[in-house]
Amino acid sequence: MSDIMEVKIVKKYVQLLNDDGIFRHFLYVCRVMTMQQENIREEIILSSMKVFETYGFTRVSMQDISKACGKGRSTLYYYFTNKMDVFDAIAECLCLQVFNVAKESYSPTASLEENLVSFLRAKLRQINLITKRFHLAFDDMKSDPALMVSKTRHMLDDEIKLIREMIQIAIAKGEIKFLEEKDILFLAEMLVTTSRCFEQEVLLFDRFPDFEARLAWLTNICVKGLR
Image (cartoon, rainbow, N blue to C red; front, side, top):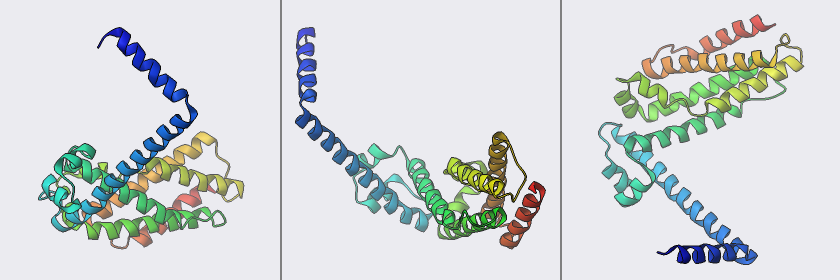
């Protein structure tokens, strides 16, 4: 294609975009296509959940996922590189579900200790349910704890943000002593990191069957130290 022809095409494209009606239609088509792609991706994720739930992780192939979602392999590989990529998407979806359910237990009128215990307890209960549901996949991954940990890092920033808000409200109400903003952020990050280590022990190694009581005890000690 000559340079002159390329310039003509670009000019024509710009002219079309400058037409308000055509441009609005162009944006509408883009939105529809994006929504369709998101729907297909979500369909693949939801269908593949049952596959991993039934067969674990090791035994599942992309062909199994393709059959479960009723999509051709070319479509499947358009959205996902391999089965680990699919499993990552499932992990992200489940982590979002866990966070949203646990977040419902949060109340600005409750004390910091009550909010922390309620949130972390609800989170652990949801994780426990998911672990039982996908126990075959978790068993396959227990040989590589680092791999398992990487699947639980979704929603980290959102969790830190929520815990940070809990601390700020507790300071405003005079429940705990004043903290600088950098210390509030550090404390929120440490609380989330510590709780996730605790969750991994429960998740990976079936430790602390009385995790709810242990959680309440640890939270009480932490809050007392902030008063």
